[in-house]
Length: 341
Image (cartoon, rainbow, N blue to C red):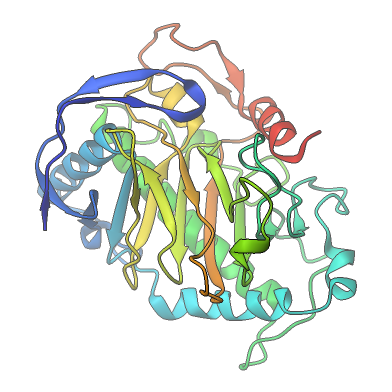
């Protein structure tokens, strides 16, 4: 499918800046580019210069013009995603009494690790609480409490989530390298400040999201499954079980994000937009309530990539377009808005 957007003014979420660019015509699904990542997939140790050049061109175009891209053939399989979603669903379907001990805020090593109950979070602070649950894996230590649910193969919740976390980490670092190439920067310029992913010095989180059945007629006024927001960190990897996510287009209208089996939806987050002086754009997205009579659940897995907490984020072009900020301080301020703290 070929899609073309006309020249228009576009709001960039939390930064409230505006851009005026002409979008090129390129292969896409519902306006979001689809890029074959097989030259740099997880089982590929090397990528040729010509392949890297093409991949760089495609990702740069997507991230400067749309802010989102679907990557196919990344090396993370549909079966891997199904496995982590299945065991997450087992956890979410338990009683609140069994989930409560794992609540976010109960882990001294990380304030963001753990279960988030229904309506606790408001990604758009002007709306009622989001109609979703979540489990954030922000710690990989074995000496903390983990849910005791197991997969059909007797694999533990901890093992499945930790393994998937590390797979996502490797893929995200590869994406960050390609992004650096696109800006003619040292390929490790974005990777270096993410060296502590998976430790208590970094706030990257694998987030399992569960949207239970909703009676739209009984929802609060203005309530959504996930309020309009832009992400906070560097990039986000999103794995979806079904469609439902909507992305703000350059024309100011929301468009449905595609759900491609085996595909990974990747988007730019706010710190990366600051870091690149608005070269890469972070855009708002949301999940609406289902239509009347639709009682289906929805699941997704999001890997929110953040720089190390102490990393000082400054504009990589040497400008002062944004003031320097540490990644940890920026995240704390954003969490205050989401959780009403």
